[in-house]
Image (cartoon, rainbow, N blue to C red; front, side):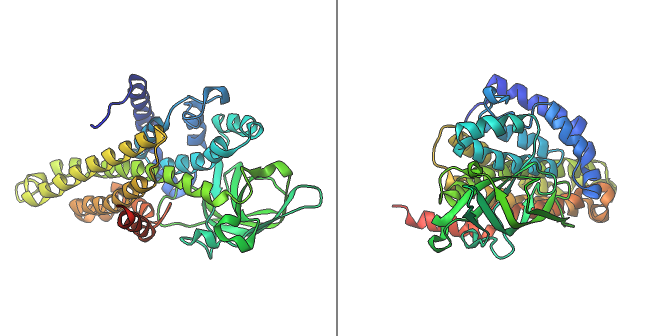
Length: 379
């Protein structure tokens, strides 16, 4: 590889790998059928994984962005849903880590390390890819606090979250520069949480709509500076796109492992189907693409850890990894033939899970615009 993990990171990788085999992978099918797994969340907390990247003074493990990606990558080898839950949780909590006041960090980050769940609320029914077009508003209240109105859609971890980081317009005339971020507890007066979405895939992660009806917030609910919310969100999405690369690599490996076992055992025309060139070519392409996903993902995570700008590289990582993951899962389904269409053999679930990676945290189309425009502007 282009860089080496530290001895501590190797130890964490082995620990999470073993945890995934024992606790995560056996629950993935259950989550697909039943939804969010509160017992698995407890075990993630007990294992110290909810706050493994937070500073030790907040009760975390003190890991860097590479360590975070190791955790996401290994968990995704057992359940893409569980990895997505953790990614969304960190995305929201990290906004407090990077932009909160010392008082906010002292209040919320220890809770994050102790297992409280966070959710990030940007997307709206009329403002998905056009994130700057959100319509939720926040105005000052007479008591010095804030009043929020509007709603959000497709918010990962909603319905199970203890805290929400909500983006809303504090100056509707200023466009993206009029968006601010607020910390909203689940029991805030005026917050209504809709039903859980009956999704195609990633069914182990909770997703609901949110509605704000004169939601009252105290003055210190404002996160960071007024009007800086959109910038904060875009920076957070850079990190989340690295996590999507890790989820894609882990999910792809999971699918390929099942397909490999099947190809070595399934006999057709007198020999295992893995002996046929047409099947071997599929595994050659899949193995090469998974290695490329891993290298892109960890290289970009290293850039983040070193404090380097990584917007372009994170977008490239997500675009390549998300699209290839979907195709790898489809190829694995094809290798299993009719059995690949059966829920008993798991791969059909992976196909459904993989598609989200081409939509969430920036669609393929938005990422192509971002990458293409950036590359063309380079001199």
